[in-house]
Length: 158
Image 1 (tube, rainbow, N blue to C red):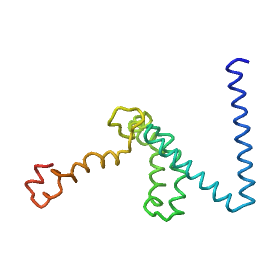
Image 2: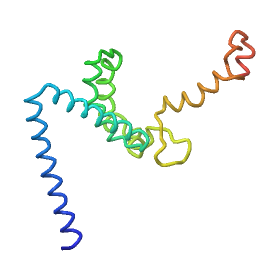
Image 3: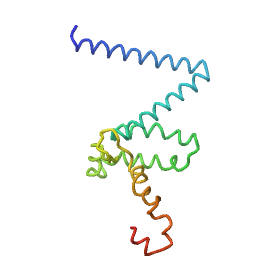
């Protein structure tokens, strides 16, 4: 048996196990509320792990694909700003290839997140990069804290 045949056999076994496990989960959900809770909890953790993977790796398509199934949970947990604006954001980002193709291409290439270290899997979201750099600098000693009442000092700092 060569490598290709081994890989195909392994792929078919994994696909079979995935289908069987899916059937098992559905049957157990039908029998037990605890099983339903546990399976839903596992699904939410898997979504969170995929979301946490998408940003550092700069994987725009994974990032967008995981935002969609996460959105109903913001409604369920009564988080109004995310509930209201995530569907709008998702629609805008999914329409980006048509509306702004020049901006879309860098996102596909992993430029939707910021990499300050050069390490290929250490990207952070742009708002986190802002918090870690400019906002932190402004809140530490020698920053904007304590001089904001003096307009001349504030202008010099900026």
